[in-house]
Each structure stands twice: as C-alpha cells, then as structure tokens.
Image 1 (cartoon, helix red, strand yellow):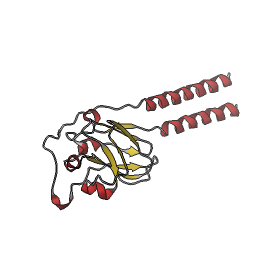
Image 2 (cartoon, one colour):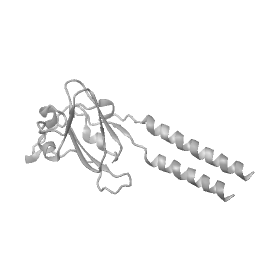
Image 3 (cartoon, helix red, strand yellow):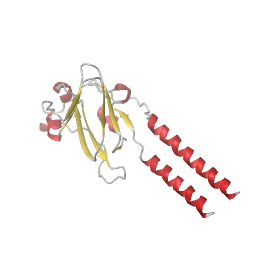
Length: 185
C-alpha cells in the first residue's frame, strides 16, 4: 500500500517540475511586430520575462534587430553590437537574469523609439525588477514618433510548447491516479 502511494507522489512531483519549467515565446510588438510605429512601451506593460523565455522579433526588410550594451542602448549606438540579425524573423532566448537591450540597426529608427529593454527574472523570482520602458535619451529630448499607436492591439500568444507540456503533465497525473486507484483494488 505504501509503495503505490510513493509512486503516485513521485509522479505528481515530476509533473509539477515539468509545468514549472515551461518557457514563453513573446512576439515583440504582438501583431504590429518590430516596427517604428509599434508602441513598445505599451507592449511591455504586464509582461514578466523569465529565464528560458524567447523574444521573437518579426520585421520588414527595412529593419534589423541588434542586442547592445546598456551604454550603446542609451545613445542608439549600433556600431558595436553583441548580436545582430536582419532576416526578418529573429529569436533571442533569455538565458540569464538582468536587463537585455535591443535596438533597430537603423540609428534613426532607434532614436525614434525602436528600442527595447527587458528585465529578465530567475524562474524562482529571485531577480528584482520588472519590465520597464526604454529610457528617453539624455538631455531631456524626446524622440517619439507621432505615428505610434496609443491603443495597441492585444493578440494572445500561446506557445505550442507550453500547451504540449501542460498536456504531458495532465497525462502523468491521470496515469498516476489510475495506477494508485487500481493498486488499492
């Protein structure tokens, strides 16, 4: 009787571990994508980025995306980047806690607001902070294009990997319960 109960508890723990380790894919800008007209400040609201999450940048051929340092982010310096892509569909996996900085490779677009700072937290929530809007350039000048939408559209993003992990966990729980129930008979 104790052995089936132990197996059931182990299956429950395994399913909880699997559920807690799932990552989320964030399409930057949702349906608007990585574009000069996208209100990236509004897009950040309510999002919590964790280690393992993926930022998906989707953009046209007139744009690119570069990961830069904090200093290069502030001045929209695109000459010394950490990573860069211009293929129109770029993924950045968030692998460690702390701030990550992304800009459009076209400096004028970056100065116009096409830049993004995200705060990545540990899965256990140990890193302090939350996603924040990109700071405005030094000197009090504001480079905000008038075409930015004040009412961004909301497109829910359900990563198939998250759904798949959820179903796997549910199957484990049901199998564990059935095993436990039939072992009592």
